[in-house]
Image 1 (cartoon, rainbow, N blue to C red):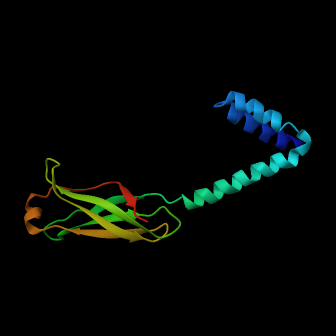
Image 2: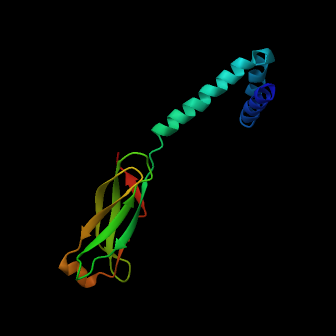
Image 3: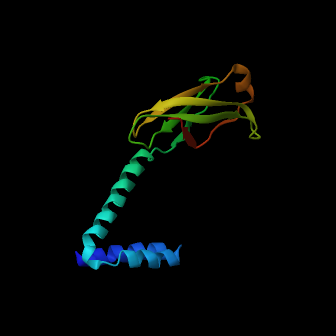
Length: 148
């Protein structure tokens, strides 16, 4: 246990010395009671706990989007698959575009889709007949923005 306390104390002062050398001396002087190793250990534990609780509340991340199929004359809509990396259901916005052979956007849309926890959902984007005449490929922003 003494080695753990020393390791934690060394980690703490080493961390502070990188940015604030003078305050690290004050901190090491004020914490100098090696006999109060329990206080050092207890002060470390809440940091670990608070890190875990803050990471769970801020753990929501953006999803990913992938074009599964582009629109054709036979099937006049594109299908985009959105993946949710989070441990709870979330809604994402997907930026999608129909493009011509030069890569110019013929039409662009933002679609919202609700995706179950750690799951996938598909969203369809309809193409008009006039758009299909010039359509070469479909594009989607690979990052699906988290809405909630």
